[in-house]
Length: 325
Image (tube, rainbow, N blue to C red; front, side, top):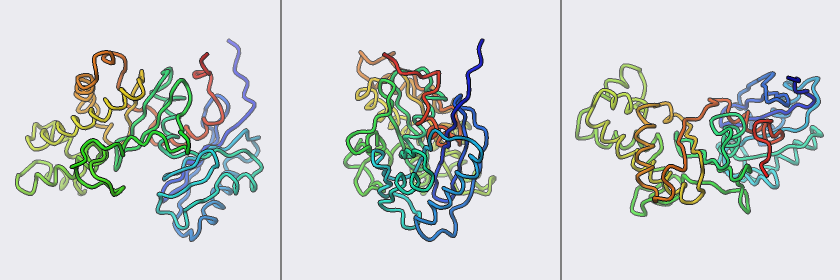
């Protein structure tokens, strides 16, 4: 078999609240070099951007770049390459990342929300590879999501599409961080699992307390899942109810997007067999009959580098996911 010729390189940047990670990829999607730095000490958006520029120059030294993909938390206008808001970084409001970085580097820059970058990474190189239509959901502190339809990342008019975590599933539910009430996020995220357990533990005992004390940590959803595996009644009740809500949100996504694959990432997905079998059965039960058997629910495959991989992949449609006619 003829080897694929490598003739162009991409840099992926994953901007977080406390760190910046950058990696160089070749046109096969192979990561060649990775660097990381902290954002601590930066006082302005300009200083953070300058650190990213220097990191890109370092990681790509000597390689011709076809483009730079950047994943940022918060609301992102991908068409203009502007980060609107939604992060705790200093001065990080209406930041024209694309403009500033292209002027400094002379290379095209594409900017997406971090959940969209993760979705594209899983579609291009991870658990969504080979899917025609994919819904990506990360269940962690909150719920992030991204949608790939007919091989294209769904952006929407202002590139805010796919914010499934803020679909309202119960208008009488608890208040969400967004200010509204009853968002999917307040029922189905890792934070929701922890909060639900803590609420019940005010009046009932649970092995969850001992598990967290053993680890020297605050109680988290991981401890609730572990307690469930030990047949702890409180944990079983919490996880059962949480999976019902996870499945409700996924059923809504199935009815809206008709995906053939749903990829679940985030800390909650690490529960593995304590989560996926019941989540699959419950989601299948909640969807209308024509949709039953039309989709699979699978754990994410790329781990912590998913944002880097997805950001770089914005510039190269890897061989495995060439546009379909």
